[in-house]
Image 1: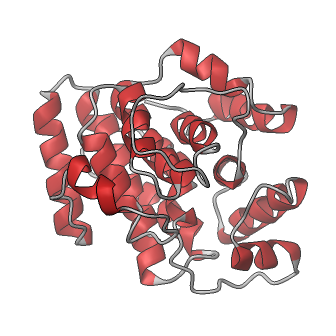
Image 2 (image 1 turned 135 degrees about the vertical axis):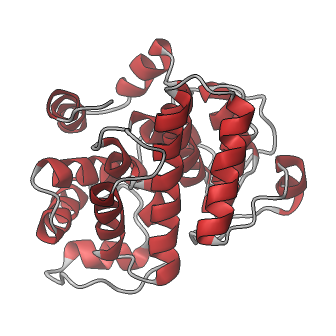
Length: 272
């Protein structure tokens, strides 16, 4: 979960000022949290409140209204600010950037995401992003996170683990993960859809050597930088963990209500 927040904060200053290099200061004074962080915290709170449909809707509306200027998409913003509780068939990448808590609530006993984790991941998407591509983006991200939790925890060969993740995501979700970052980067442009954000974010993880490198990979592609890095960061956290100095720095950009969600998450959710 914190990996998504790190990616969001680091990418916040590059969303509208894309860079195509990995050589940049990881944290700048003008970095800030955006809707990616707010909605990731909302998903975490929804799970802590019971993980049912109404819990997700209530938490998203609560935190969306607490942070009305967090740069939501236009349709999502309208959904937040009205009494409407029905989904609107979105396939935007918002479903994938907020899904990470769903992959951390079950004990990692096998390499396959347990049914409860799958239910939560699907439901966290469907309350707004119920288009098949929106659901697919969330599910693929959750699967990648969970597989990294399971396999990296067992000290298997990192290259082999990444091969398994790549093979599973391509087979299960039909994403093309064959292009390298160097092949993607020159023509990649801003895109808010799952189908043109999630595969790129997964590749940024697959080519990484550690958590920081994964974030730098994602930012270097350009595009919807904060969301791209949030998705990559959520996967990289499960694989590598997050260096303590990066955790501390990310926390420094958050206000007290968001820090409170993270504290409660760490206290109440068993992460194994």
